Image (cartoon, rainbow, N blue to C red; front, top):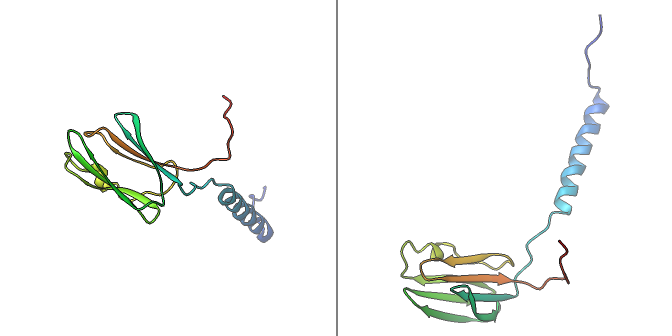
Length: 123
């Protein structure tokens, strides 16, 4: 009769080491969102303002509803709005490039953008 396949102590250590190295490599090359450098405010899809993220400022946008956008301490938030649901206010503070806050009823989008080393994209 054949003896079943059994792992030796060294086999288990080797498998564990490979798994640890795989997780380490994954974490090492995992892209991070870069800290944003600018805030772009769009109104109905059109760029209305572009400001440095580090600027201390409060902007009031009036339309069907009123939205108050606050820049403070290198981050931005919609701090007040009278739109239904106020989802934009619940989005909280953002500071990473690629993040955005949207107020659909008022047609407002607040984007955090950053500097990129990419010159062009092929595809």
